[in-house]
Length: 284
Image (tube, rainbow, N blue to C red; front, side, top):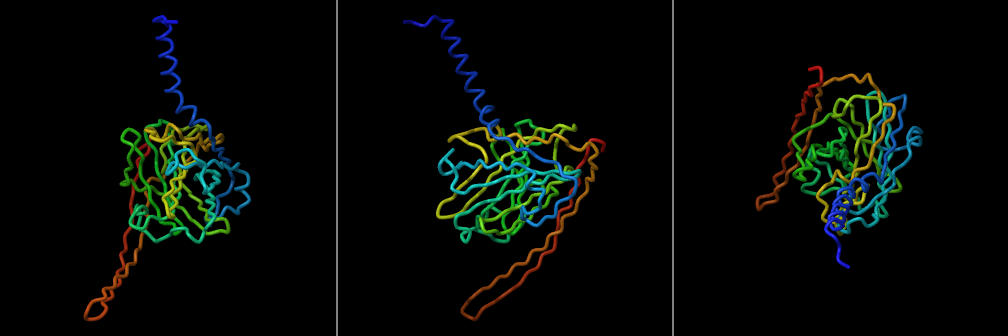
């Protein structure tokens, strides 16, 4: 039986529509439900505050590498809370061999070099445009990395330094972290009902490198944010105070030792610095 031209065109249109809607269907599979709390949370790195039990956990975790879309051997549980000033994201990172977790003290934005630590990371698109996301990453020593993800070039820009905090802690199951982000560090539209996009990722360094994500990423994907889950905040505050000036101090200590033919030369260095940032607001 020979297909008529109009049937061929309908078939082609159906295929195009199906392929174009596939990423949207994939990203809608996971939803993070945030719960509003009435008091600020203490940053201990542990999810032992009773308020965390109010937030339903998102437990999906898949490999993006080395085996795309396969179940992760390193489970995660993600919970989200928020109050009048901050977004809190608590992550439990389970590990069958917690003694092998890689952790070093690193300078800001140096988490991926030279030692390659175990890292937990967020891609947060609070504008829900699908074109870019803010990145926040932390290791077990609370070393931070942040910047912007650019969807058009599939690349990271680590030059922005946002005002945020994260505290991590060991536990019997592996490790956990609590990330606190003030709303003044986020780009979002005003309104009491917010739907943002979120991907939680995890780097695990063992005999192999594992990249674990909270959504299924097919092999050869070319659109990361197409697969992001919805982060729903149903009672978002409308009286957020926009303090746009922030100062984050930093102190680093380094030790160098040179074992030569004439003995050992040892040197200690202390560097004091910081990050001063100013973020314009709509009224600026």
